[in-house]
Amino acid sequence: MYIGSRKWMNTSHGQLGFKDKTQLIKQILYPVTLDFFKAHIKKNSTDVPLEINDIIIPDTALIKDAINELEQCRNIAIIQHSWRSYFWAVAIAKYKKWQFDSEDLLFASLIHDLGLISPKSEYSTCQCFTFKSALQAEDLCKKHHHPQDRTENISNAICLHMNGYLNERNLSLSKEVFLLQQATACDVIGTNIHCIDKSYYNNVLLRHPRYKFNTEFQKLIETESRRHPQSRTALLNKLGLNIMIKLNKHGE
Image (cartoon, rainbow, N blue to C red):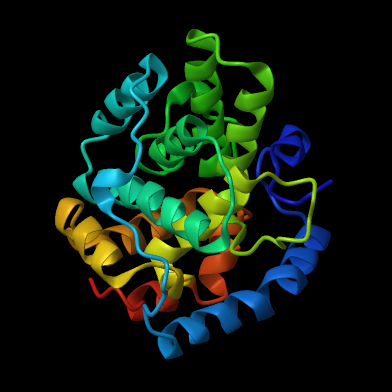
């Protein structure tokens, strides 16, 4: 069972045991550290051009509902982070020549942090904000009769985005799962920024500014770590996530 996955959440509720912590550290510490330092060495020098106006924003009832849920959190830094995550995901996918479902990826991007910023009381037994976000996503998908297999994929992507690193050779994980994890990491600590065309990067930031995102996100991470001390968030924070946020290439 993959640590951090939706299936893992069913038994752990997002709480890491000692063996889980040891295994997760072994899985992610080296690749995350390596990717972080690579981000500071490599430049946005991709020869894969991309125009922000060419990006598809699915006009569906599910997406409209997700946008409404996101805007209700009333945290501008998280709202813009969620949108940027989708745009970074699209750029990373083009760079890596990956195919993905636009509606599912956008939906996951918009919902992935709602459990961090506005946790609902009905999800109080969850010991990780990603599990809360995933359950909220599942409720919205059920409301719109979204296909079960796609709902499960969205939920798994949201749960796993906080792992810090996912091995692309793992064939059990979808491209949407990899893209949400890599795109959110890109926005938070700057990894995979070399995959993004410089002009496209600047245009995304013009449309969705950071609004002192680093400061706001560090506060939210600290709050989550205190609320759920045995979560992946708390573990990653102890391993230096807060420092990586502060030193990412995006600036504040």
